[in-house]
Image 1 (cartoon, chains in turn orange, green):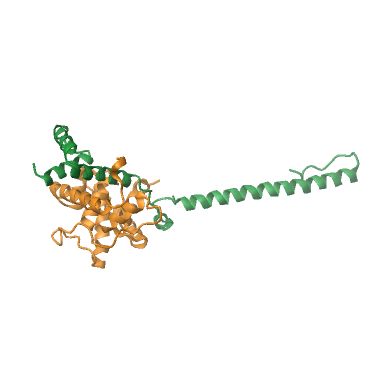
Image 2 (cartoon, each protein chain N blue to C red; image 1 turned 180 degrees about the vertical axis):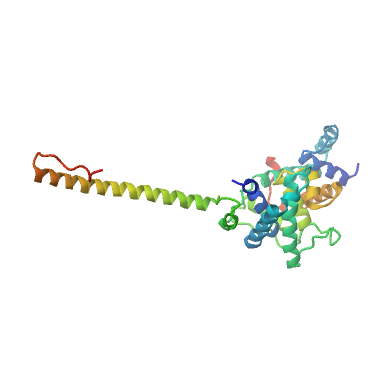
Amino acid sequence: MTAAGVLYSRYRQSVYGFCLRMLREEAPALDAAQETFLKMISRIGGLNSGARFRPWLFAVARNEVLMVLRKRKSVPMDPLDDAETVADPGTPLRTTEGSESSALIAAALERLRPIYREAFLLREQEGMTYDEIAVVTGTSLSAVKSRLFKARIALNQLLSPYFDTGDV
Amino acid sequence: MNHDEMLKRIARLTDDVLPVAEQADVFCHLGECEECRTQYMMMMRVNRAVRQMPVTEIPAALDARFAALGTVPVLHRTVRLSSVVLSAGAVLMMLTMSYLFGTIQESQLLAQYRSMGSATVNTTSIR
């Protein structure tokens, strides 16, 4: 297997998962993941030897996601644009019968604005450090902390009607 | 310390990044403030639920597109599953053929043996 093949095998799941959670639709997520790996193959030679690969790869994936979101023109990605609104207001979360935690979480994540959703996903699903998230999102450490905090508070608000906290 | 600042500390506590030196203050506050305690428990609950979310299924198209580039082998489970099915089918076919082939050869052998009596039997066509 080639080096690109090894990297692809290692990161295909997480990159596609990130694109899907951000874009919420399979087809554009597939395209974004594909473009990410194509760019990985073409640009990896230019990667600084001191740079960490995973944040770099996710930064590429994030840019692909951003392009799709900008084309949709439905959600602001600029932190200066409506930054105080963390989650989309709306009807109660759509839940299936049984209201499993994962379904509720997925529905709540969809409500978060992309800049908060990406920070939360990179932290909780990818296990990235705050520094790594800052690299991926091209923001400061304090911005990462702030976004994560706001995302957590927003998720608490969205999910509190559904989650029983007595068993924590 | 105001309420917002305490909430930020609580969030960092649930994220395992709050320095140990600051944790005692937060736990003391949690013991006294029901609102913060509820927030803390919700954050813990959400974190746990997020980590238990099922792994995303990868469309076969993603692997197929990269396999087409020639840089990576086809890896998707669907392909592997089809390979398994094909392999199983091939094995089944081989077993069936060998059984049928063996039966035919056996009958041929018997016929040949009968026609030749106890003389030598041509075994070159029998495998």
